[in-house]
Structure formats: structure tokens, C-alpha cells
Length: 209
Image 1 (spheres, helix red, strand yellow):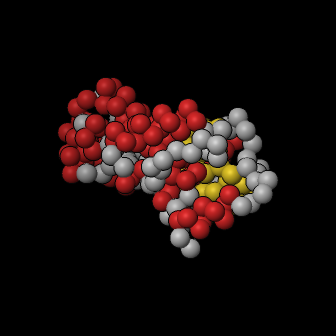
Image 2 (cartoon, helix red, strand yellow; image 1 turned 180 degrees about the vertical axis):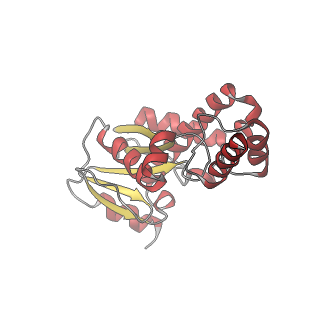
Image 3 (cartoon, one colour; image 1 turned 90 degrees about the horizontal axis):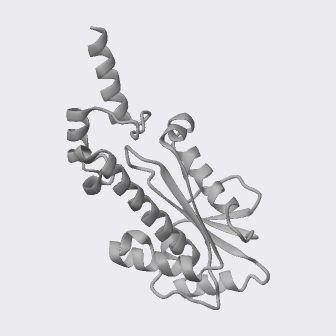
């Protein structure tokens, strides 16, 4: 099915109020995981919506402003580092998605979820693999989740400039791992993630020696 055919089939669902849902930040070693839900306004189409990873930062920011201005409803939610460590990243992501859906000012009748898993929530859900580049509503959610996470990373960078969060965005790059070894684990790091856990375990052994 082509992009156009898929979009047409979605809008042909008479009476459905469709929201798209996507997440940002499953892979990083630090910071919350974000999710967004968006109900677009068919009377105010937004040109250029696609997977946020395929857009420049400037284009994402410009589109995020349009989405917030013209969508029928939108919501951004998150799960904290502590919740990620307690639940695991998959369950925390599902919880962030549920929070985003349930925080919408308009209740959708169908939530289209990017990926192959759906959160448990009161709204009917459907998973769409690679939906962030197939369904406009999911593309819009992808953009809001990504820009919200990028903004949070800049706040984290201001708090801990020695970790260079503005460069690696929390992902386990060589630079991030080097700064972790040099400066230790912050309260913003996900302690259940293997590279962080290994440093904490090593520090515990050292302090106990």
C-alpha cells in the first residue's frame, strides 16, 4: 500500500477520531523517554510531515510549532529515569504513550502507534510498523516527541555541561562513555542500562575494597 493509499484508507474510516502516537529516547543512557499523541485537523493540513529522524533540527522545530498551532489536539508525556529503571524501557515507553493519549483534550476513537506494540489504554489501538513515515498523525507525534526530548537534553546539558549532552544526546557514544568514566553517574542516568550499571558496580567494588 502506498503512502497516499494508506492515508486515504485512514481518513475513510467514517466517524473515527484518529490520533498518532510515537516515542523518542528509548536508546539513550540518560534522561526521560518521551511520547507524543496528535490528532490532526483535516481542515488545516500540514505539509512536510514525515519521520522526525529524516528532518533537520530546524525543520523539526518549525513543524512542531505548526502542529501545536493547527492540530485539533496534541499532548506530550514522559517517563522518568526512575520509572525506566523500575519498569524497564519497554514498559516505561508504553506508559509514556498511554499518558500522552489520555492527556489529549479530545478523546480519540483510535490510536495509531508507531512500531509493533501498543500500550494498554482505554482507547482502541493499532500498531503500524514504520508508521512515522507512513501516517501523518504518527509523523506529527514523532516530531513533537523528538523536539521535546531535544529541549530536555539542552536543560540537562546546562545542569551537567561536563557530560556534553548537547553533542551525544544521551546515547552511548564513545564521548558519552568517556565522560561517564571521568565524572561518574549523574541522577539523570538510567541505572538499569548496562554501561551505567557496570560503572556503578565497579565503583561499589572499589569503595568496598
